[in-house]
Length: 243
Image (cartoon, rainbow, N blue to C red; front, side, top):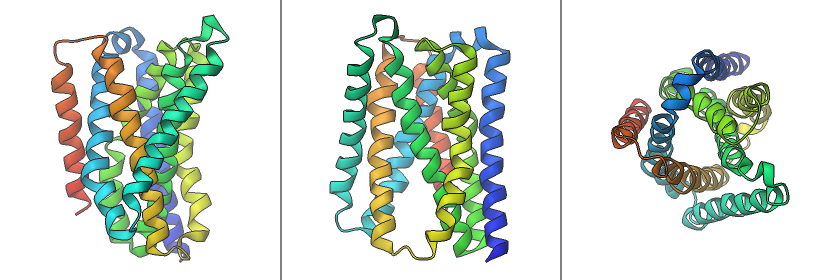
């Protein structure tokens, strides 16, 4: 069991490092990042939507009878969270756009935390299963960090604060999710795990389809559809890599 713990921890730490590298790269080439942020948003949306529909939702349906209801609950919870944040910042005109960055940050943070839990689960099953999962999941960590940072920056946060929040939400949450979930993974039954997967799918659908894509559509770029398609193709690769 100790061996499974360390392999899961190493995998989740690698994912966090990849996310951090993405944030550092975009900080170094900020102008380029700002000019092309729409493409990153579309790419991330393609990944989140596709992985939710093709992988997370079907798996949750197999494991939990009430998964369809829980997908709706997860989606609605993210919407309510968005409304709450928007209502809070409306009292501060200079911060009215903060929700643009905070909502996806919260969604991505939740997603990354659950990623960490998935590392715990798959590596507990077997190192081989965990390794296959890690190969697929790490693919989306690089753009995830970039998108989180850029959205926070565009929402009005300073560069320093954007970096700190993006690092916390997109990078540190993955090993944190792994460390916190590992002691309890062996006690999870399939319906409980299916419930968490369904809630996660609903939240990811909201972030990808309802929050990220409308932002991209307001800044129509020539190759935005291609970026969305690229994200979907990468997501299909992730799903196939998980077998």
